[in-house]
Length: 323
Image 1 (spheres, rainbow, N blue to C red):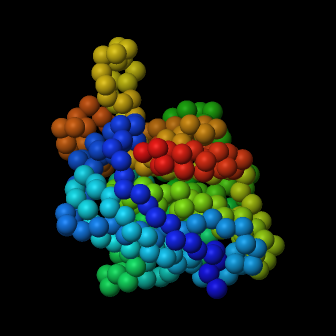
Image 2: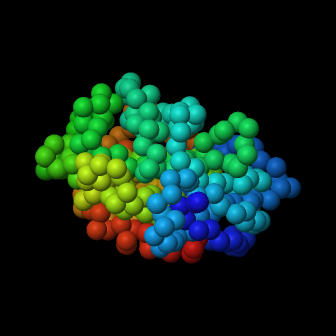
């Protein structure tokens, strides 16, 4: 029995949008060229829905959604695809690892073990695939790893070392040390990545599903230790943005360019809701397009209190609906 009951949901054809999100996505799509697509095809997406059914939530199988059809033109054409959400499994290793290649910039670290942690945690975590895809391609994923539970893993120690090195603010560095130290049992490292041209309509159900699974894990995991490991009070996120090189010097009204371009629309919401955050320059990633010549790629670390999750979900739904 599926964890959640499903219902048929029709995604309406996207309308032209002139929001900050739309401008950012247009700019980034030109900077990171998407896979060539067939201009004569249609998009079919499988979108999970929320449920409060107490019995269905205890099933361990990932929700498999009924097909929904839509014509949704993007910047490179239109692709035919049936997207579905699945529990992570070992076969997803290569696809997830590819998406995380630059998670810690150009640092050489035990990324393979980090991917293993994500895939081994099947009760909390989701991968996005195309239904019945023979190549088993991974188009995105999301997970949340307890910092205390995995504190002795080499890969997690390397994440800690890297972030502390990148943080130049002494007060924030102390808070970061606390997250990896005395507060680690209550901190979830929220890891999310997906291809640049993933339909944004998938994001609200993707995150709704993650936070639902976290709640269920606090009730359904077989041991009290595991149940406690998902009772997060804080989330730590590591992401990437493009920051305008002159954002501190620009005169008011001198430019229509954004100060910050978020690669992932949800990051702007997380950033606004964060208790604290910091940026650091990315050494291994350079701007190669004229559209982004005035921007510098930056790492973005954010700390978000779990009490802000409800607001995050509401704002994400509104953002995507309005775009």
